Length: 119
Image 1 (cartoon, rainbow, N blue to C red):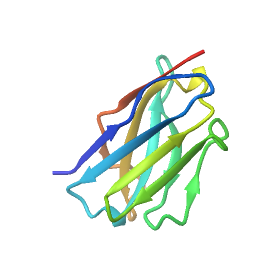
Image 2 (tube, rainbow, N blue to C red):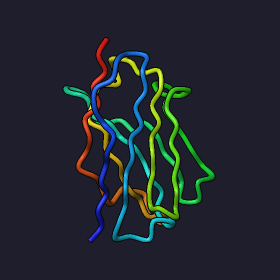
Image 3 (cartoon, rainbow, N blue to C red):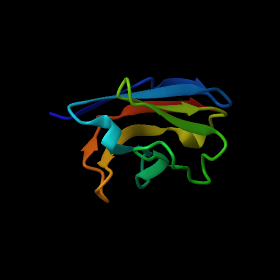
């Protein structure tokens, strides 16, 4: 079955960096666009980074643009999220998700990894 497993979360100071990784298995990774989402307590889930299945389209919301970088390695079935200049408001559970290129909805989700930024 499809599995998405996040790693790399933890505690960071404001201004610091963390790198999240998501290892995918059970799917043809190169056919899936990938997203990193986050959910903070009391807030709605937010898409913070998107990379298309070809890697040619990458998007970020204004809240993280210039600070977060998404990348993928199709040979390793992995997608990473480099987070720099972290802010307290980046504190959330971060999830990776996979969406087959033919679909509009994300079909597969990881279990999430906690990121806590202390100010």
